[in-house]
Image (tube, rainbow, N blue to C red; front, side, top):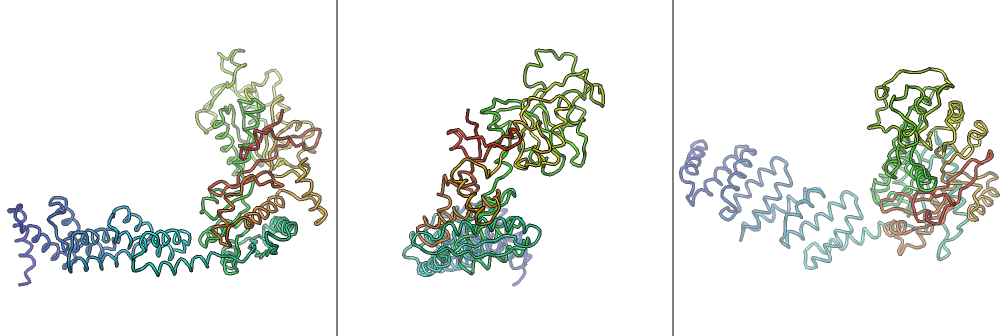
Length: 587
């Protein structure tokens, strides 16, 4: 009679007063149908789920599940809609089964890859599993996740040879195989040849072109093809350049530098192996096709701490750093690495990066800025540590006591409870800090610095104060390695200048790529990516290198010491050759 309110009231009375009646499920279904027709979708879901939990699944009909699924569909809850269409199909037969199946297919077509995978975890029925695998492969294809699409569609074809969509999947697989192929030995070069970073981009290009010239031909005698794109130091330009290189069917991309994030994401999206030249955090985590070959802060502090702890026997460290982004980053990395290798950081002080007088932070490190504790004895002075910080908030409140003298006071000897001090700063500033350490009687400690210290300007400015300072770098043009000697001599002949770290790393990256192309089984970008990962112990001019499973470079860095006003290479012991990103002094 169209009297919905009375109908709902009577059905409610039936389910309440006669819960054991065989008519209760039908009454509940009629109730849900009326609520759905009135647009009360949330009520349909709430009441339907409650009744499902109470009644169990054996007594519920396909239409009961269908109306709940329809309510979820109306609310845009795609995954839950598919789940309930699946439940309806699971208990249906005859015409109901076909209706539920059709609705299930429609709902699955709307799911994204994550939702389909969640649904796969819930089903065990072979027909539904075939449907879901096929749809998952197509969803990956729509997302342009071509490797995932190929894997899933390949599994679908193998596991469901009788499926109606098998031929379509085979056609897609063939198309994907053709798409991933690249022109033989074609490499894209993505560098800032104009703009703010053009100086570095040109140096990297010199290294890459030198590698092409040195390599000549690859494997079967085919010539190398280098397609160069200028990023103009602009992220949007770099991203568009990746698209252009994809259309030109390059096998891989070398670069970029400063605009690496968007370029890496674009290359990953298109399944193009890319080797970026940047220290930027997290770049290799962009995806399986993103590699990084560059010297990173993590590599440097790991090598410095390793040689100090393992070979020099240093257990106690201090850190004196500029209070700006670079200094804070290295301070935290160094501190973490010292703790990881079992050492102790006994002093951490920051200084004004724009200042010239560093007496205050140096005195704090030396224990002559504050009064010493009354119970400090000679026995305590002979042991390390004298002080240990609970956290990294180096506030004055943690050292209670009277300040003795704001100026140097020769009456008091420094309490140097560390054997090495790390100063992560540029040569100009470091050359001002280091002599002041000696002025305040902080002597006979190892000075540790980053690759920024690899500068003759620092040696000239600091003089004898720099003797036996230790630094790490990714390349040393005066290395005794025959490989490096040959590279430097040939490069100097070609360009009339000595190569630096950028040229060396770009050269090595190109040579690694050419070697991987030679080893790849097919002209497939995916196979090339796998060949890069298998490339271990590559003997490059910037050290022995390879790639970790996440695409991060694993490198042996150069350890250098300043001796008699010049940099001297420290040879590595055999133990270091198998240790990524470390350096060990030979006795």
